[in-house]
Image (cartoon, rainbow, N blue to C red):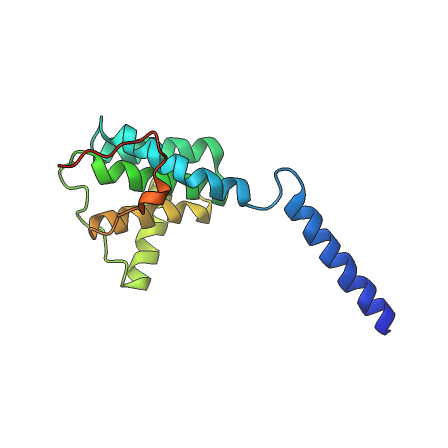
Amino acid sequence: MIRRTAAVVAALVAAGIIWILWPGGGRQRDVERTPEDASGGYRYGETTDEIGCMDEALSRYREKGGQSGADAAAAFLSGCLRVSGASAGFCDDVPPSANAEESRRWRIDRCAHEKIEDPSCRTIFAAVQKHCEGDDWVPDEEIDEDFQEVEP
């Protein structure tokens, strides 16, 4: 019995290691893209308003989908919203993220409105909430060296 348990544990550990090391396995590649996506958002945001940022982020999400696509779209959106022009009414009806139940319902409703059924879509709208709360700051290490932020 002990040998059988040890063999199962060893097989699971080996499978986990292979999954992480296999090209495309794990989420490391997606995590590494996030700073690049935020910088792309900064560049795009300089040329558009909040609604333009939202439209582009959703378009990017629809191309990739899944949680990694949502993470990349949210990083792009955060960067974009940080420097974009304001859109009238953009933050109207956006609940505070501190209200967990209202936030959850709002995110689900927004994804449904966009005809996106994947729950990972909610990550994108969490970025909208942070922006509307004035909390869309992105650390400098998430900005690639080619992007130079201009002081206001």
